[in-house]
Each structure stands twice: as structure tokens, then as C-alpha cells.
Image (tube, rainbow, N blue to C red; front, side):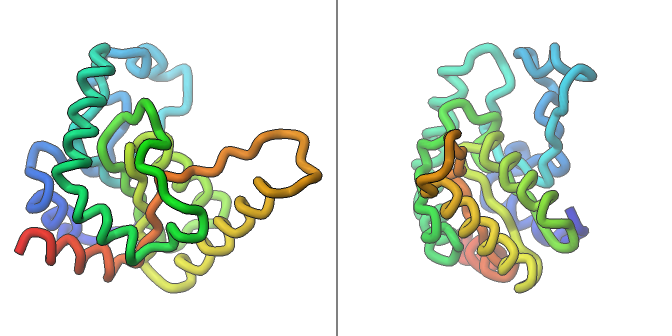
Length: 187
């Protein structure tokens, strides 16, 4: 993550609530499920921002109901992000991740390599019911467009012998558009 400043953090807190927004969130923090056991034994993602409710206890079904409810409460905001995103390349499915760690997982991208961006996209998708990639400039946005196109081509290839996992719960959006929609939401 490149420093976006506290403006994004404050916008997120205004929209979702102070206690629902975590910056640089390690997905095993305060966990009492299997991720806590894996600490030190496995890669554990750290998201730039995570929006709760969180699925970090053994009460998975109850946690997922809370996350699904948050989706319904914030449905219009999510739809506004989708309208301004690259999501149309791959389609969007809010039910793609059946066991998210949080409601929304956000990664902010500026100067990373394409390999790092792929990792950010997968982390956001695997950890959130909704994964959001915030592109801080046009070059980064274009690289995500190329990455999504590549994944779509690979998934449709008749030559492939393995299944390619393409995240369908990802929203890739310009930083300016993301902030504008957050500001519009709490007016």
C-alpha cells in the first residue's frame, strides 16, 4: 500500500463506523479460529483496509449472516462502485466467496509489480465478501485491465488442462471515483 493519507481512512469510518474499519489488518488478529493456529506456520495476508463485520471466530454461519446483512445495508454503495469499475470485464458475483474473513477487503495500489498486483487482487477476493482494488493512477488501472483480460483468456482457453480460478467478487476502481462515491454515500 502506498500512503493515501488519512482521508481514505476517515471516509471509510464515516461510511461504515469507527469500529468496523481496520487499517493494515492482519487476518489472524484477534482470531479464535484456525487462522490463529496457523500464525507463524503459513502466509497470513495483511489487508490495507478491512471493513467489518469480521469472520474471525468459530461462529462462521453467524458471522457470515452479519456480513451478508452488511452487504444489504450498503447495497447501493457497492452498486455505485461497480458502475465505476472494471468489473464488467469479468462480471461480478457478490456470492463468489462463501467464507470471507470480512465484509470488504481493500487493497490500494500504486507502484507495485504486476505479480504483486495479482497477489493483492487474490488477497482482496479471498478475504472479503467484496474485494476492492483502489488504483491510484491510470497506469495501475490499465495494468489491472490487462491482468483481468489475461485471466479471462486463460479461463476460456480450450488448451488448458486445469481450472483457472478467476475472482468474481472484485471491484477495481480509480482512487478518485472511490472517494467520490464514499463522500456521496454519507451526504
